[in-house]
Image (cartoon, one colour):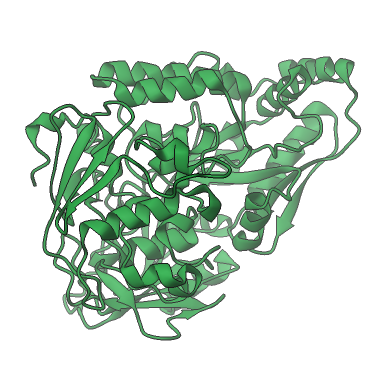
Amino acid sequence: MRLSRRTRLAGVALLAAVGLTLTACGGGGSDDDTASTDAVITVDGSEPQNPLVPSMTNETGGGNVIDMIFAGLVTYEADGSSTLEVAESIESDDNKTWTVTLKDWSFSDGTPVTASSFVDAWNQGALSTNAHLNSYFYYPIQGFEEVQAENPKVDTMSGLEVVDDKTFTITLNQPESDFPARLGYSAFYPLPEAAFEDLQAYGENPVGNGPYMMDGEGAWQHDVQIALVPNEDYDGARQAQNAGLTFKFYTNLDAAYVDVQSGNLDVLKTVPDAYLTTFQDDNQVQPFSEPGSVFQSFTFAASMPGFGDDEEGHLRREAISMAIDRAEITEKIFADTRTPAVDFSSPLMPGFTEEIEGNEVVEFNPDEAKKLWAEADAIKPYNGTFQLAYNGDGGHEAWVEAVTNQISNNLGIKAEGKAYPTFDELRTDVTDRTIDIAFRTGWQPDYPSIFNYLAPLYGTGAGSNDGDYSNAEFDDLMSQASAAESDEEREQIYADAQAILMEDLPAIPLWYSNIAAVAADGVNDVEFNWQNLPEYQLLTK
């Protein structure tokens, strides 16, 4: 690959720095030597919240499918290192203006992927009036603020310029040496010209340029499954080794596990609570257990009474955090397949440190929690019920019950969970801001960097900033991190930014999710990547 030595990409080979490839422990494929590339692989999934348009999708139900049917300028290897995909080169003399040259590439309908395919898609995603959930990711590009205005006078970013069909330039607001490392994320995927005629309709049966494509009309059976077949014209690094992928939607992970045992589901990426203590000894499945990169938390709705951005709210947030015994829950509920969180990122990220100023707030301290709650009550008494919303189709009931019981017992208040039937229904209320209680949140990284755990979730106006948190000092540190010229400088800035989060607690860090997954007997080539996901294209049986 050629990113040019001038780019000084201090984050492209990010996870390679820790020398970790997430492969199986106690699993890794069947002993059967008759694995077939003619087999369709079934994997678990969930109903996407939105049409399958990259810039409109920021949740895993749709995101995992989109990553299979689209290809970006850059793609990520299983260990998190980068390789060029659609880009022939990404070069810069100053880390501010980048020139992108494309390979010969086509969408699955045969139309060419051009510079305009990228530029038009990014402009569409950035425009405020389109209200796309991933618009935040374009913020480094010159002209983003103009198209993000409430009533924009322009509809394209000035920092994007098409030179010819194979070349375009990206001019940033400031030099950012690690910018190309982000370009493998789905917000930066291209769209065919036909998509812009009706994005909603296009998103029901999208035409992409990745290793798979939709399996014809009706490929998306809502609330049931999405069926993909290999894109024979794909010529990139993620060649499909199977005859297709079917994402089957489950509202009950226990049922999914039973389907793996019986051979009716090939891979389940998340073992439900009921099987965590037994799955590694279950001779009906292939078990996988490895360190993972997913961060779990819960977030306070901006309109939640008593938990606002004031002294009372800060005291209550600290009290709630200190009332939770994370070690007990990760041991008893998750059988040590989770690790208590000490920051807002993941131990697998380069630059991770436990030395975050103020992170004693995530330590279990019931006496201090009661004291802080009483101080908040002295400002204004709290007479309500603390509620924590979660999706009932994701295996969250047990830990939510444990967390709310601890809060209730340690603070002397009433606390309880509130179940939404599906992830889609929960996310709709969160996205529409019609929720006014705390709610479960988690983050599967889009690209391997601590920056990705921070800026998209807590930056002012960021698309995944579900609690509408805003702190100018934090925002400034994110800008400084992007412009940092060394890993050491960047990592210190991340630590400083997390110290602000520990003080403000826009979300309560809970734990890091290990890979705890199973595959059916006879499934081969099961490898998990830096996102805690199977390398879907490699699966055979």
